[in-house]
Image 1 (tube, rainbow over the protein chains, first blue to last red):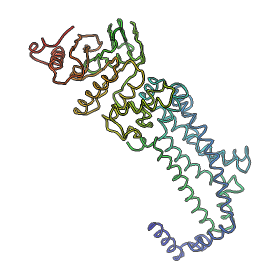
Image 2: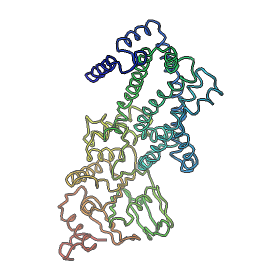
Image 3: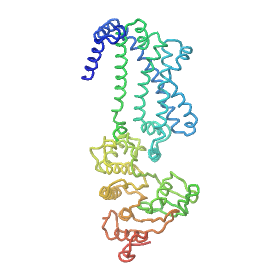
Image 4: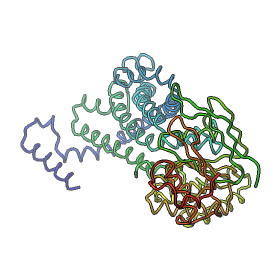
Length: 243
Length: 250
């Protein structure tokens, strides 16, 4: 809290010093008024819901496909050798480079940002899941065999349980990436959402509202991470963090 | 308590050009406790993997009757399951939930871990974890217990305690046991018969029966005699004679 107070004081000092032009550097008070304005109009809230919806969709699709893909690749060396170079390529290709194609294929609306978020989250999730599966101690599978766990049970009760701590860590990283990408995607390929709001207020030269949006974007990112961090408190995954 | 539970006939196992086991023939009777000792890297674990059916011999025949359970050196428990859930794994074949719960509770009190039912393995000491492993392996109607240096990760005193614990559990739940260990004392204290392997390629160097009833103390004359005899055979003791006579030999 003290650090926040210092930051605000610093911000006020820079504003008072007049280093930047008034229109390029809003005062804390103007931003506070901006908050009031946004809350009254309800626009920010709508944009927030829109962005959260897109992130949720893209992220859930990425988890639902990336984790099974990683499980499969982790268990099969041939699949790993075949797909790893491709996955590494796409992982290192910024999802933002896909924006032109996303617009051409899906237009402006929900689908484009969802597609881009999926791209941002899928590859790291698949890759980390794969690495985690490949590193499961053999003894777990031997025990599973000794006690007659087979096939699907083996996959869900042994492999998935064994990698759960790493998967949760990856989900947090991927969710952070998704939240970064949604803003960028909406700035270019959006008619609404927080990213579009950033672009819109810039066009309207409302730097006070711009700061309001930046604060909200940052805070929501922290909240998402905190929520996912709650997963690490599940008793059956604690072992992965306490050794 | 008769008949052969595990039978090995001229079993050989090679990995590529490396011959690990050469013509091992061994019968383990129902209810018998056999310990296999030998220099490290000689193929003890390979032998155990063959006994469990996890691995197959390059030549020779292995037959076994009954349900086999293995206790590993360490970390064989699933860390994402509680003590209770881990032990329940050993009772999967029991359909009736009430009966399963009753037997889990019985195993937990047998290994004296009442109050730890809902603890996870990482919250337990090494000795407690191995007790849970033993309980899981002994739960239900398993017939054969394979132990792969189960106490090697424990400190000396914990190891001594676990030997007593194992002997006590086996009195309650008799099983056919094959123990692989590099701890000769452990073998002599626990087993009815000790098989000593040679360097790789491992062959049976000699075997030794210990007639004293189980459980026995570490300082029981027969245990001391057997330890002495094995150490002498392996070239670790100077006076070859002496107490050797008191150790029964086959």
